[in-house]
Amino acid sequence: MVIGVSGIQGDFREHKTMLEKMGIKTMVVRTPEELDKVDGLIIPGGESTTMIRIMKMVNLYDALKAKIETGFPVFGTCAGMILLSNEVTNFKQDSLKAINIKIERNAYGRQVESFETDIEIKGFNSKFRAIFIRAPKVVSYDENIEILATFENSPVLLKQDNILVASFHPELTNDTRVHEYFLNMVKQQ
Ligand code: GLN
View 1 (cartoon, rainbow, N blue to C red):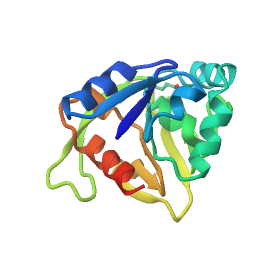
View 2 (cartoon, rainbow, N blue to C red):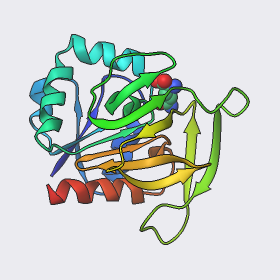
View 3 (cartoon, rainbow, N blue to C red):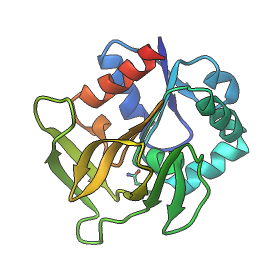
């Protein structure tokens, strides 16, 4: 099993380091050819406007979108979640339209643009430290989506079939449980 980490922009090195600590083979993905060599892909946090623009420039947008439609497992954190969502507001921008959620960018307000809090995650036997950095908020979602965690009544970890998204940054902690959850999705594929 090889897990790809999109190296277009953002904190992909932190995801890579976490996976390697877990004994997982990784590959930084920047081209459709590299995408074809991995069993699942993580799209990191960063700046979603830049990410989507570059993804289109290097032809990764179409290749990835087509692959996700065939069941390829993807995990997006923060800007990665924005990229995978169906609709983006504040400001409106294009996305991969893979998971049926609507996102408002930078929605947690000025004073608390970045914060940490302990959240409950479905199936985990203790709380998880969630780090939010200018985080996106899920403002609506399709009813068939599985909500794995919420914060202040908004979902922050969601799954739809082969797609997992988090509005926080598990790669910035030492807790590998969310990554393990994604690896299990890849193994079941
Ligand atoms: N605010 C960023 C965006 O809208 C996302 C922040 C992050 O990934 N930490 O793209």
